[in-house]
Length: 527
Image 1: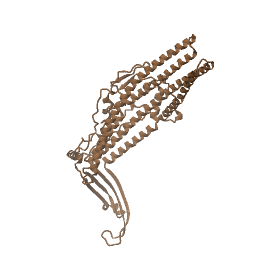
Image 2: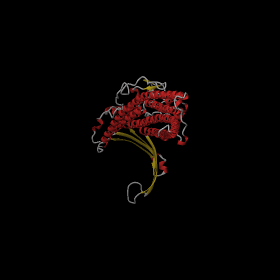
Image 3: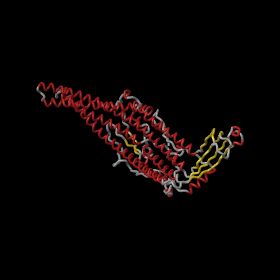
Image 4: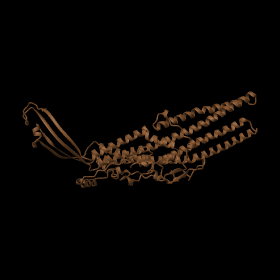
């Protein structure tokens, strides 16, 4: 399977999913191979993933059709919709789009994963070529030799030369599928790397978005905290003056000073988190920390109003971690078949043609013609139980891969369920925080109006403004959380599935020829 280039951001690396190359069998011995294979037993499991539960909804409770409206947006959960490939563009920020594209194009980690994937593909091509095609070697010999000085038959001189040149051809028939299954196992392992590379691309994009949103949220929190500190310091100064005049108690003064100091103590921690987020973002996009990009404006970001909810049965085809687990299962199934095939006979044909002799005139004449044709048949009889143990080990690896696949699917379901619940709760928290901020702002405005009429003192206005800024700080934090959790849900949904009909064999073609499961091959207990 290959990754549709439309699912990648501009400048990102395309990630085709490799399937094993097929080579046609020679017609002369096709019938014999088929007959022998049919006469034998099934070699290994099919590699098909186990059936998984198909829940009607992800969480303990069905998710609502939409969240509550918070800051004017009620996010809709579109059940049955396909994942959005470039979901970060839904935030409506060109700066955010540019950061993601830069990271996908320049990340050293992603480039290293790409090179490792290409290396694995070349290894697969090399193994397929060397195992399914005959080997042809040119051999040249020029040798001077000393014979012992004793009477013997043969040449009558103690020193002589040997010259030879020949072409050697060898081919091992894959009668019981050992070569084919080994190639299928390697192809599936390459597919695992391809899916892992796809997952790395998606994780990188999600981490860039999360870091950018985190930095923007912290920036806004720092600005509001600085305003709160200024208000608290002004309030402490005012209480200090009133204390000096005798209109405020020492307790009032200490309380005001403690409040100002407490707010000031929270600022370095926020700044450290902000700096760390900026540094992390710079590294994610391939820059040094001193080249960290400017922060996004949190208020300018658009919350996606609709989020896709892939049905559970489709999630198995959209998440690269599940697809990687399935490819691992196919590799393990092919490994069982290959281990079984090692117990059966191996047939090799060899031929050599060339010229040779004790002198160049003989080598270049018809008398120096050399040729050889041969066939060998090897049947394991006793290997101290090694072959049976290898097959049992392969079966255990297959069972482990089967269990890992199940756990991967269950974890994916949990991931989506947690993200859906988080969005619902984020909206509720943000709505409550927004209501609190609006109410506190109204109190501040009313108090300020009463102050202008002389009905309340100035410190009452300052206190009401502090309450408003504190409520605003919570609103900023919950808005940032809602934006980040939305990105996490898009990430959890995976990529749109690729149509197998467009891939010339589609998903799992690398192991399609693996036989159904059977333990018949383990009957030869001495192997």
